[in-house]
Amino acid sequence: MTFEPYLSRWNLEPDGLGIHTPSSNLLPVQYGEKTAMLKLARSDEERRGNTLMVWWAGRGAAQVYEHDGAALLMERLEMQPSLTEMVAAGQDDEATRILCQAAAELPRTQPWPELPTLQRWFRSLEEVNASSDGILAKAQTTARELLDAPQDVGVLHGDIHHANLLATSKGGWRFIDPKGLIGERGFDSANILCNPDLDTATAPGRLERQAQIISDTANLDHARLLHWALAYAGLSAAWHLEAGEDVQAEKTLEVARIAAGLLGR
Image 1 (cartoon, rainbow, N blue to C red):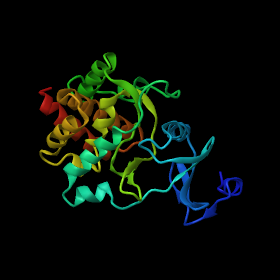
Image 2: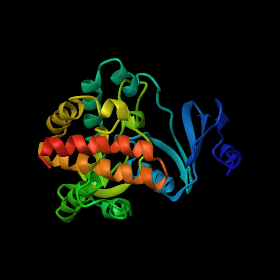
Image 3: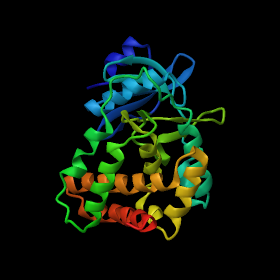
Image 4: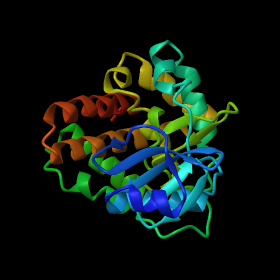
């Protein structure tokens, strides 16, 4: 998949070097007077994310200028200020509040586009061979309890973390790179607790403090958020195990252990 057909179709001028990731190709461009980013999705998941970006229509997410299947032309956001760098500079609390406040701007209610459910995503955790007394087993049990009695269901970004929220030139914040899911709002918030990196996520006292900030800022039940943190960390570890990334899986399971400890599980 090449950029050229879309450069011609939408009258774009390249404005930087292309960026190639495992799931998409990106190219900074000029779109008339506007700076923009051309994204070509290379997976079904990224295509769904493109569709969700169109549906959000710039409400809490980058504004979409053009869309055609795998191709998305959206506003180019700023790399500075960076939430990841804020955390490194000791502003973890503020970064968490910004993420929660920005997430509240994303439309979530029906009618929503056709998207997969959280139940489908959690199949990876169910398929992991977990010992009956292990942390993965606890994550599996917790996930089942949450998924069997969902609350506050709506459209989810699916990958809310510090690198997926970028600044606008006017000082606001907008999300990029959604996965696109239907499920309980707490799942998106739990993702924050595993980011921006696992060393930060597992630092002593960090999960407990940030969970309280998320609960207060996003108006979420604190205990239920911790349950989602346990379930999400288990799911993330399952994905790492599927990819043969055992070291990353073990680090992620430490987040699950911390959440389980706070819950007394």
